[in-house]
Length: 123
Image 1 (cartoon, rainbow, N blue to C red):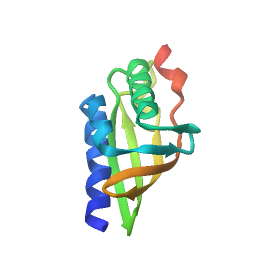
Image 2 (cartoon, one colour):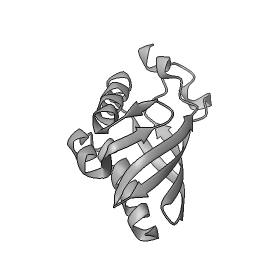
Image 3 (spheres, one colour):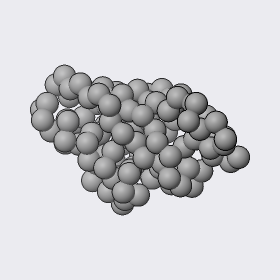
Image 4 (cartoon, rainbow, N blue to C red):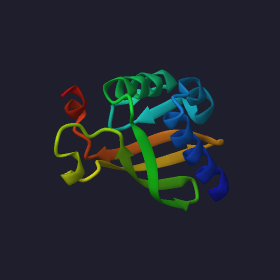
């Protein structure tokens, strides 16, 4: 299970970075639950991804650390392409910490927090 859980988490970040929204249907379970967004289903993932990518067209998620334990995957990422303004070099990169539960080879649940200021892309 550990290798499968790691692989599906890696596929998820690759699909996000490639702007492959359709891949979400093969990565997330039909009854996927996003606890931070209080959302259910693959369509909620596709909507969240497209919204984030619209606000931050250059966004790329870089995996910094990944720890797998059975059906759970904990991932720390940095978010590139989201900072705007004159002081970009002085700003720390936003980051995310996410925990996934994998079931039957797909992400079934997600918990997470982010330091991203979503309004920053509107400058």
